[in-house]
Structure formats: C-alpha cells, structure tokens
Length: 418
Image (cartoon, rainbow, N blue to C red; front, side, top):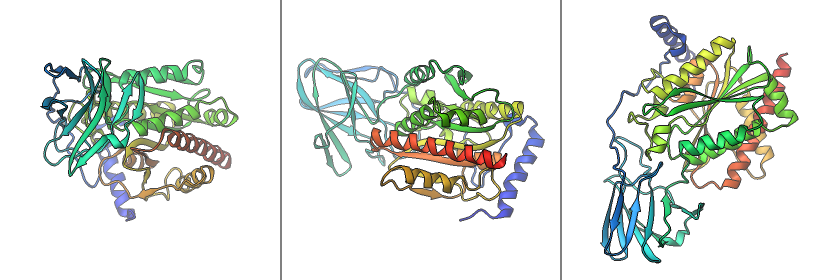
C-alpha cells in the first residue's frame, strides 16, 4: 500500500519536533508507525567448553568465535545430540549453530540437532575441513518430521560444522585490510565507536578527493550475525567500487561512499542467532537508538553529513534470507533519486543473463534501516537480501553488476543535474 502524503508529512513533522526537543542533530530521532521496544533484554550466554564422550572417543567444542553449541549428549555409540538455544526470546525461527568435532579414531558419526520447542532446522550444514569450506552432501542429512540428523566423518583433526561459513570480526577486519592495501589515497578504514562488549565499530570512507559537498551513499551489513551471504554480496559490491576503472574513478570523484562492514560484532563473535549483546535485533532500532551500535552509526553518518554539507541520497543494507529479494520503499516521488530503483533493477537484469530481480515493495512501518533512510533523510533505502543457498558465483555476479549499474546511473544522474 502506498504511503499517503499526510502520513509521510506526519513522519517528517514528528522527526522535526523530536529534533527541536532533543537538540543534537547527530541523534535526531525518526518515528515509525509501529514502534519496537529496543531497550536491553537479558541474553543466555553460552558456556564456552569442550564436551567429551570419553567412552566412545568423540569430542565437540564451542571454544572459538562464531560458535553456537549449548549442550552435547550421547544417544548411542554412533549418535549424539547437539542442543542449540537462542540468545533470548522472542526471536526468529532461524536456528544458528557452529561447533568443532573430532574423535580418537576415524569413523562416521551422527549428530542429532535439538532445538527448543517451536524452533526448527533452517540451514544446510557447511563443513570446514582442512581450512576449506564446503556444503555437506544432502545425502548425509536425514529428516524425520522436524528432527534433523547429520552424518559426518570424524578423525583426530577437528572439523567445523556450521549453519553458515563463519566470518568473525577478525575475519572481516583482515578482509578489509587486504582489500584497501595500496588504495589508501581513495579509502580510509577507521574506528568510530565501540560495541556493547567493547569491540571496535569500523567504517570505510571511500572517495576521490575532498568529500565536502558530495552526495553520500551508505552501505551496511551484518546487523544479523548469520547472514553471511549478504555480507559476501557487500564484499563484491565494495570491491567493484574500489576497482581502478574509468567508471569507478568518475564515480568516486563525485560521490562519497560510507560503508560499515560489520554492524554487529558482538552478535557475530558470540554466535547469536539474530541479536546483539543487548539482546536486540539491531534492524529494529533505527528510531530512538537504544543500542550503542545503531546510536553511534547514526551519529557518525549525521555528523559527517553536517560537517561536509552533504546529502544522503542512497542507503543499501545487505542481508540474507531464504531467497534473493530486494525490499524497497513505495515512496519514491520527491525523494533524492525518484527513478533510481527502476533504472537499477533494469540495469541488473540487462547485464545478468536470465536474472530476474525479485522486488518486494512496501514503506517501512517498523524502525528498520530502509525506513530510516527514507523518513530520516528522504533518501532511497533498499534492503538487499541474498538467499541462504545462493552460490558464491551468483553472489559475486549480482554484487559486482549491481555496483556497476549503481555507479553508471549515478554518474549519468550527476551529469544531467550539472
């Protein structure tokens, strides 16, 4: 349903009133039709330990960043139950798990997954063997109603069994550091704040030359810890922007990209299903900013806009779900880039053989990032979702092509304006 003009004006007026009431523009609140309580909620902190079944020589461990394993119990000599609990409730029905496993001798072994009542198995297991990730052969996954059992080959060298490939805060930092090496003239990578557990919140600023008066594009990812496929699309998107090409050179001469490669480091490293260390879905806090990660991100963006006399024109938030989909806002007329979405989607389809953009459009009622871009900055906001099972080759293709098409559209738009 389209947002009526009086509703849109309501959002704008309330935001202005809150600004007048609370003063500091860097923390200007944005009101949504359906508020969400984002004050801290207690979480279940998993005990880090190695579980031992000494009589059959099988061991599992959650003693690494990104792990999720809450209990481990023998069922018989060839099968054990792994119990996986969420960090708190209510939470989405997308159980995340990750643990190491090994045995004294080489043998096949079965892991039966146990979740609290009402939760089910979502992710096909990924195995990390000899430092390489692979998706488990589906013939080794057995389903009996809601009960899932996985068969793996164990030996004395630990393997990791995980819902998604693990990309911890350290992994993200290493990727960014390597990506920008030799490109320091156009990109900086700095810490702008701390998470609830004291981890660094970091940002990439990408531009050729001064950022003063340049329109801003914001990129976000990993608000939700397990959503790694969206992060991979973000990687390819940013990598394409940083290519030494005529297009990227022209684009970065005219625009300033502000990119946040890891919004929720606490949740990622703690192996959470969805929330941060405050027990909150960060993509419901884009209104009054109760969580430090969102509060500091909003403050950073708004202060940069004020300092540089810039305008935020586009925000892309990279996520993962069951299939590829782009969530957009219906409201486009009168926004920063009223024709961008239709032109962008056409460009993507025209340049990926057989690809059809799956768009789901509705104005954000709840305080999510794409609504914040619209209501807080009158900018185009898009939630860029990649499917759980989308191949890395396809992720690379859509990430690259979508970045190229964005740059082409915006450089042409800039020319038409000037």
